Image (tube, rainbow, N blue to C red; front, side, top):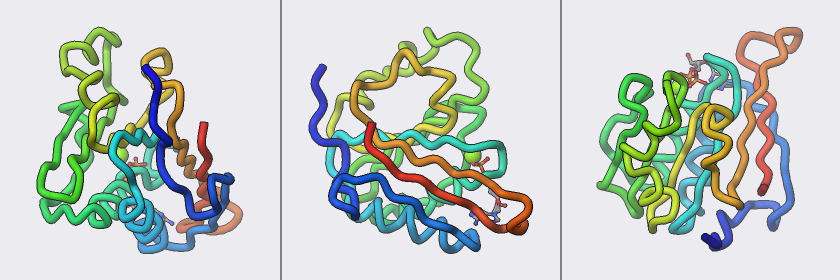
Length: 156
Ligand code: ADP
Ligand code: MG
């Protein structure tokens, strides 16, 4: 299936890097992208445990106008939020056993629907990712301090 343009990025479709110095910075980036997100976009969130993928997601949800609290759906794989500007499908596939579980969840309706998908641990379901998506990669750099994160946003 062909994707629409995934998301309008601030730098006109170019990749950009930002340095986050606090959870608030990461949340604000999420919020900004949530405000800009277009129907059908899929955003993959890479980063180690504790990098800030869920913090980003919480900001993103706020940007979509979602008021419901957003937590990590680690034990449910998918959580849906319907009370924003667009439906948000938040996947955390960290604990997925077999990718057939994604079919059971009905992931295709999410990935190729008119909502927005955020996927934590996308490398676990590499084969199922759409042809075009936005990659948000959050990296820690211990030498730069406990709260430092380098965040790279790029279209794939
Ligand atoms: P993940 O979903 O990637 O496993 P979480 O978002 O659940 O990670 O947790 C990130 C943790 O790191 C939170 O406790 C948050 O307060 C902390 N943190 C510290 N600095 C930052 C930062 N710059 N950006 C995001 N989170 C940060
Ligand atoms: Mg998480």
